[in-house]
Image (cartoon, rainbow, N blue to C red; front, side, top):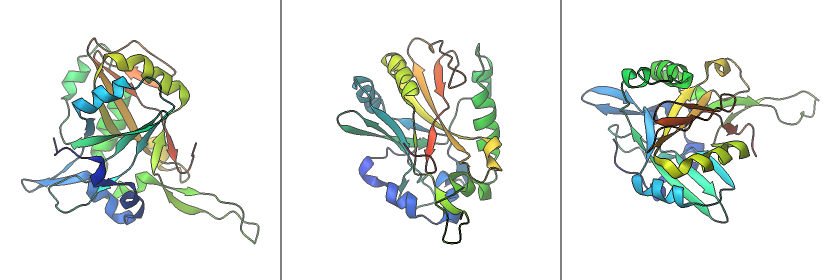
Length: 239
């Protein structure tokens, strides 16, 4: 696991201003002469305790942010979870290049499709030069002076969760001992120029096994982890 990242060190503005062609580098680290891609981002144990203590949640965002990239030996994409109640809480997520073996998941009673496709197959195997495109899409503004729709490129800044998903998180967080963000790719959206194809997946690992919750594919479970695979990118679709 990488060194713990603090909120003060990460910057959403740095994410917004970074050159398009440089984004992919922030997801990789150089170790023993080889580049390794981030496989997940984990909340610290203390922050998980603080997250569980929040009684009423109004909104949850998964925010894109970058740490200053001083060395190739560090992964500098450092997302954080922003929770709004009457106050605003930010929980930073620390990058990791490790992941449980496939056999650990395939031996479970349920093998989530999100792991088989969006993460293991799509994210892990995606060519490095295509990562930049995952976070951009064409947006259509108001018609120009000539009455023609004019596309322009937008970069996603955060993903927001619906009220239904937040309600489900409220139900399962009491038994949660670990919170992980997995990067995923929805290949059905890659060729759609007006859609963001990067798809973050939130994993909630439980003390007493995953809750048996199924809401039209929004949540999937293994024996130990509940996976939330639905969120909305902003832009292009903002709350």
